[in-house]
Amino acid sequence: MENKKKFNLRTLIPLATAIVALVFIVVGLKDYGFWKNQPTPGFFPIIIAVVLLASSIACFIQVARDKDSPEVKYNRNELMVMLGAAGIILCTFLIGLVPSCLIYILLWLKFVEKAPWKVIIIIEIIMAAIILGVFTAWLQIRFPMGLLGDMIF
Image (cartoon, rainbow, N blue to C red):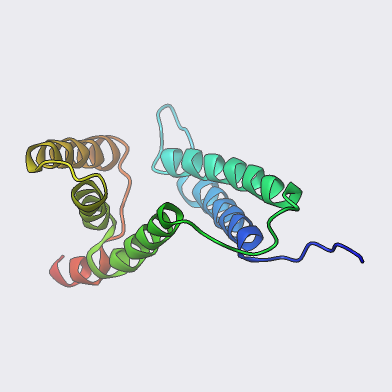
């Protein structure tokens, strides 16, 4: 009996994320640049995309070598991360990327990590300061505003 490895969800996800990473690298370099005497708006997105590409390739190789698990089964933590990513993508179209990420952090800390409100508020303030201070003010990265943001601004 021949043991052929079929493509399944575990192999398609790393391929899809590798394609997304390549798109971000190309668009970042072409439209925003990487470095001109200082970091340009494409600097961090390109770095993140390169890390995503490397981890996608490593994940694909690991899944391709694993011949013992032909069926796709995800544990609860894997599903939570996938649902969280899908939620951020959906909410980005509605309310924008920054609020989506801050809401995701809040929900994750409260319901998954079961952190106290004091810790959640401190982390949210620090993350908002980093996002708005470093990425928006210093690096001049334009985050998607979403439908709500486009209607307001």
